[in-house]
Image (cartoon, rainbow over all chains, first blue to last red; front, top):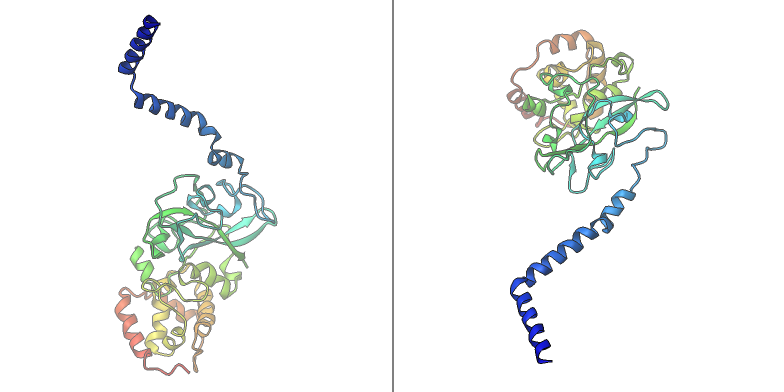
Length: 172
Length: 141
């Protein structure tokens, strides 16, 4: 027995000298975290979210540049940035002054007045950048140029996050 | 450029359209929406410090000869993507609508608007302050 005890003690002391207990816990923690990442509820909820549905009387995907309301948009779609085609993402403020234009709804083939309210107060979203620019004018005609940062009208300053396209009503 | 847009008294969000509705066939209200509302907002309230409030002011300004000319010469009006006739119709609707309804208001003619807008104001702020100082003493009814 003494011999077995000595061997066991020797091995245990060798292991204790070689192995870092903190390092082992750290590696074990990292392995669990990385392994569990696909199971976290956040990741699953994003994967399970269907695309934002179009409003009644409209067709198309509000998260796509081709969506009819975006005929004159120049910027990031709020639909891809935590907001929607007509609402700002949390933590941003809609600019009260806007670029207003008209777009033709392919469903009823009528023109509608669309207000492109910029959402402001957080850094640029960077997703779903669209540049369609129908009827956009050069910046030397600033009142009709959509390259302007319309966030100049907000109290939060001029930090641009994304753009919405709010239908104000039929045109004409 | 941005500053001139922000301080223009009637800064439009004008669109010269290829396939947009023809301004000539649109009502003055619709042309206001398309050309002016982007900055002046639906009720004319504008934005403090950036876009002047039209409400309760435009009717007073229009009663002063200098003010009547100012309305046609301010860059937002002068540069609007509208014909002289359409612009005259818009102003003839807008001035009483923003109030106070002027006691005597001869409607703008297309020719008058055409002359004024071709003589666009270069320095706006001093002229506007001078006119607003005169309206401050005018009865609102």
